[in-house]
Amino acid sequence: MCRKARKGFGIMGKTTRRKYDPKFKMRVALEVYKGEKTLSQVASENGIAPSLAAEWRDQLLDEGATDVFGKTKQERERKAREEAAAKEHDELLRTIGQLTVERDFLQRFCDECGYDPGEVPGGRG
Image (cartoon, rainbow, N blue to C red):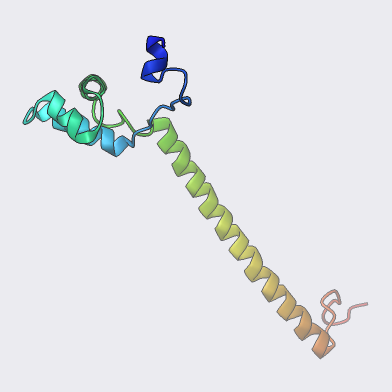
């Protein structure tokens, strides 16, 4: 039996990469940065490789803590613009609905009273 087969390489299914939540990454990176525990202790407690914890710490220090693991500034701005546009769209739909109800009410009122809105008041001519 070859060494790779014995360890399960290529025989089992394809393994997928795990994706970690930005908050989790930040928490681990800060824990490593504080230095209260060793890198290996932090990594084993969180079920990750020590090299990954060190990489996250380095990213935190190199890129700054603001958006290291989360959304970029452009993504946040785009989301804010989309939310503003959606709010404006909802407001316009609400206004259209209100105006439609008012128009229908006035049309019914005019029909009941026999008033023709296209007629010129005073009957000139």
